[in-house]
Length: 549
Image 1 (cartoon, one colour):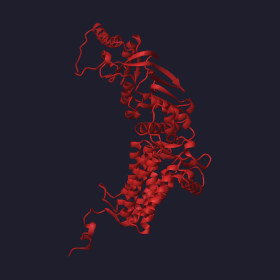
Image 2 (image 1 turned 90 degrees about the vertical axis):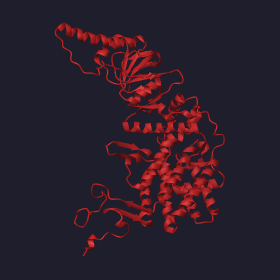
Image 3 (image 1 turned 180 degrees about the vertical axis):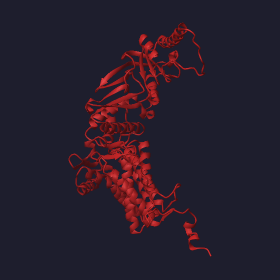
Image 4 (image 1 turned 60 degrees about the vertical axis):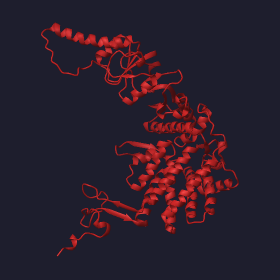
C-alpha cells in the first residue's frame, strides 16, 4: 500500500518542484504587488521638488550616496521585489530617454497604484481600471498639448537666456538656491559644444571635473579638457601645440619573439646598451621632427624615453583611461597611434595651449581650444566635500540632458504644479462624461495628479490642503498658469515666477508611469520556483528551527 507521503499534490503542486511558491488572486498577488510599489514610491516621493529631502544610501560596496536624485537612489537600492522592479525600470527609461523626471515617474506610478487599490476594494476589476487609466493617459496627452506656451516651439538653442529659462527648474530640483550660479555655467558649456545641427548634440561632450576646495562660486567652464593629473617631466606649459597620441605607451618596445644574446666583453655590453639608447632617441627625434610639441601616452612612460623627450623639449602627458584618451583625441582632433613611431601630419592633433595649473592644491592639466567649434567643454566644479561635488555633478548632468531635450523639442509648459492641477481639473470633467465603470478609474487618475502639489507643499512645510484648494479655485477661474511659490508659500502665476517645465519631460514621465502602473495591475498570479542550490532566502523556518524545504 502506498503511503500518503508518496502521493503527489493536486493542481499546480503536482506540476512544479517541491519548494515553489504560488500566489494568486487579488489579496495575495495584486494587492501585495501594489503595496511593494507604494513602499518604493514613498521613498522617492519625499525627494520630489526643490525642497526635497536627501537620502543617505550605502550600497553593497559600502559606498555612501547622499542625494535627492531618484535615479541614483533606486539604482543603488538594488530592489528585489519583481513588481517594484517594474517601477525602477520605468524610472530608468525616463532617465535614459530624457535625463530628468525619474522621481515624478516613480512617485506618480506609486500614486496611481494606490488609487487602483482603493478601486479594487470598492469592487472594480483590474481590467476595468486598466481601460480607465489608458483612456485617462490618452486624454492627458491631448490636454498637455493645449497647455504648451505659445511661441515656445521656436527657440534659438544658442540664446543663453532662453536656455537658462528652460533649464532652471531641472537644476533647481537638485540644487535649490544654486540654480542661478549653475545654469549659466551649464548653458555656456552646452552652447560651446553644440553642433551646427542641434539635434545631433552629444551629452558626452560636456565633461565635469570635480575638485575639492573653494565653493560653487569658484566654478568655471573650460573650452577643452581638464585632466586630473600632472604632466610627466619638467615641461609644464606649451602654446599652440601639435599633439601626438600613442595608445600603447612611450617606452622601448619589446620584441614579439624571444631570443638569447651572448655578450663576451664589456665593450659589447656597452655597445648593446648604446644601440638601445640610440633606437629610443631615433624614435623620439622622429616624433619631434614631425612638428609635435606634446606627447600623450595611453600607457607607461619609460625613463629613457622621458629623458629624450626632455632633451627635445617635448611635453609628456599620461592618460590611463582609454575612454578619457578617446575624449582627448576628440578635443584635439588627434588620431591615437598604436606603436611609438613618427606620426603622419593628419594623425597630429592641435591645442591652443596645454598647461599644468594648480586649482585648490590639486595639479591639473588644462587643454584649451579657444577657436570655435571645439568638441569638448569641461565644467570645473568646486565644493567642500566629495558628497557635495557628486550631487552638484548630478545637477549639471540634469541640466545637460535638459539641453539635449530642448534641442529636439523646445516646447514648455507651466511648472510649480500648475500643469498637474489643470490636468486633474480637466480629467475630472472628462470622467463625468464617461458612462461605464471606467469613469471611476479616470476620476482616480485625475485625483493622482494632486500628489505633485501635495508633495511639493509637504516638502516645503506648507499646508497642502489649503494650497490645493486655492489652486483649484484659481484654475476654475481660468488662471491656468497659477502654481505654488514655495518661497512665499502662496499661489502665484508661474509666467511671472519664470518656472517652466519641458513638455517632453512631463509627457514621457506620465506615459511611463501609466504604463508601469498598468503592467503591475495586469499581474494576477506570481509563481516562484525553488532556486537552484537549496532553500529560498525568504523561506520561513519550520517548527523544528530548520528551514522547511
